[in-house]
Image 1 (cartoon, protein in one colour):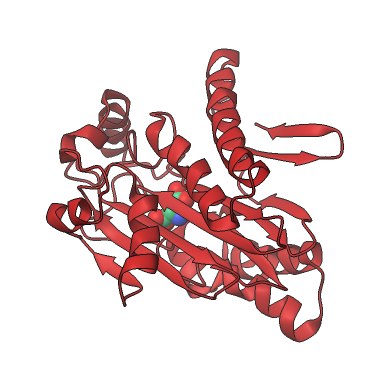
Image 2 (cartoon, helix red, strand yellow):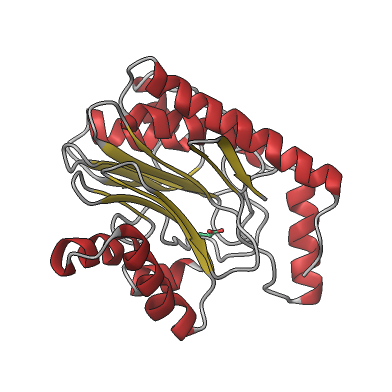
Length: 281
Ligand code: ASP
């Protein structure tokens, strides 16, 4: 695997810091967990380095098709979008599906719908960066599936003890047009339920869907009485590692315990413990 230069590591750390500060700012001012995870993800969607929103991984034909989901552990409600092309921030669109419609998952939502919910619309070109076009060209020339992940996600617990999760992605670079991964699938890439855990995943989406990974963690806690750490370890081993799939996740339980786990070589994350912000890069 290619080592990150100190300079790009610092760029990723800046992006993570912005996301962490946006999310924790919402919580510090008494906001709820749903708004906190959306604020954190918004920063990563706006940042060109991360695989979501502006700078998302591209489909084989060089376009961005964005997937996102949000789940509110307090109410059990969720919203999601797949193959989105018009909302500047897919995570806000997913939240609006949850809060403003009777549905859970919308595919290729129209620009008119986005605007009617007072969300910012952009041209589909806004999402496409030179770096992602180069990545696509490299993958297509070499036909290698390597280093294609980078979905973004956030989990949070608010002052009321409620938890939420949000996930946003361009999917796998060079994916077939119309392919949808785990990120907008509740239970696979995203799950939250008060009293159990909020989970947001990244990695080979097909394996996360087959293993119903985010819900598998919550189910281990619910039915087996496992703690979050044990549930995550077992799910990653049985549903990913044992099946030759790679990826990772961030999770928080109702007591505010945070777990970051991955079987991929690296995964970036930021969270706080009693000593301050911890940055994993
Ligand atoms: N999980 C995403 C997907 O399969 C990809 C990623 O995490 O990078 O669409």
